[in-house]
Length: 122
Image 1 (cartoon, rainbow, N blue to C red):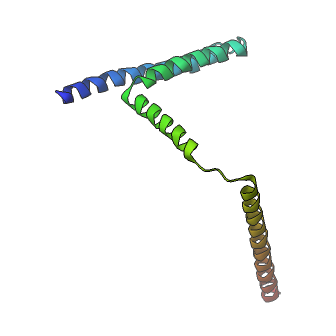
Image 2 (cartoon, helix red, strand yellow):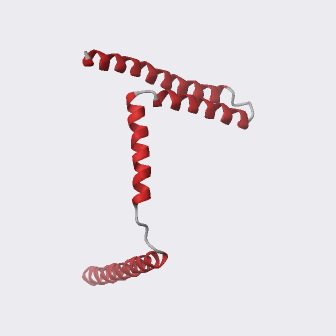
Image 3 (tube, rainbow, N blue to C red):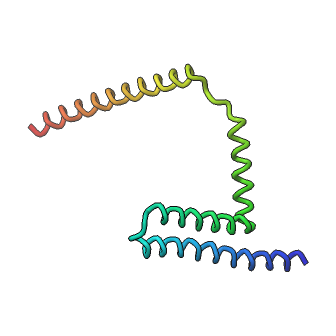
């Protein structure tokens, strides 16, 4: 019985995704067709279509899973321990010094190889 319920949901989900694609296509075509109209009106119409398409997409199984993932990611971001200003400055300074040292080393190797090749070629 659950397999029938799942397949019924997937058929309905497919229909919802078709509606979402059609809404996006209407937005793109409408924006092109009404290109002589005010940009403000076109942007407002596109935002309205995007909101409707997003609402329809969130009604699907994948849309709900995406929304749950988004909520979980938001919770995880709150758990992150961000570095202090001093730690950020120190890490940045280390990276800048290391990049400069590697740049100088590559310049020295390039100069040495160039000098050797010019000596061989004459």
